[in-house]
Amino acid sequence: MHRWDASTYDRISDPMARWGAAVLDRLELRGDERVLDAGCGTGRVTERLAERLPTGQVVALDASPDMIAEARRRLARFGDRVRYLVADLGRPIPLDQPVDAVLSTATFHWVPDHDALFRNVAAVLRPGGRLVAQCGGTGNIASVQAALATIGDGWLGPAHFETPEATEARLAAAGFVDIRCWLTEESVGFADRDTLRLNIVARRGA
Image 1 (cartoon, rainbow, N blue to C red):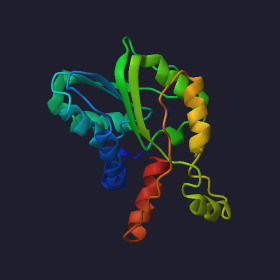
Image 2: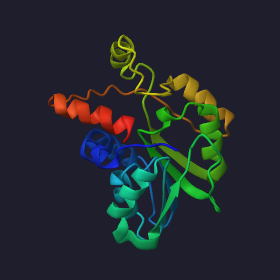
Image 3: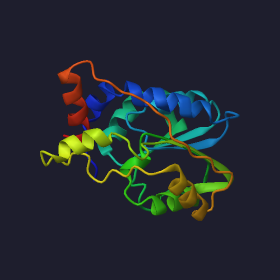
Image 4: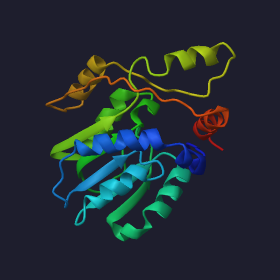
């Protein structure tokens, strides 16, 4: 079971919400689709997704029960248009019917086995369904990892930062077509030591 400090994460998740909004803008929707938010966190991006599906449904999935609890509070106004699911993307996703699209932001790099990840995502997509995602790529926070390694701090756990080429190959092997992957430079700063500490606490979990 994955444990995150959901309330702290929500306070410091502005960058993730910003990235998520940009990813959501790439997903064309009629408004009646069923869409999986794979790694919904506290529901900040999920909320925007649900607003774009007035006659559709969102499946809000996260590996952390604490994140799902926070998302339930944020998304309560959508009623049964949002379904909640605690599940590990590294394992088969327990959905009873396929989805039209999968949206994911700041999540895939936390799944160690990307071959299994993309197979599991493909298995719940209907034929012709779409995957639009953003996650940490190769070189992501490499300097931070190197600095932490000098003090024996492994707070990141099994994070997996991959190249676009390797990701395209894995997606193709899982059955995806019309694939496009790329790296984007994005700098994230911390206003002060307390903000940095909160980032570390949220990722380590309670």
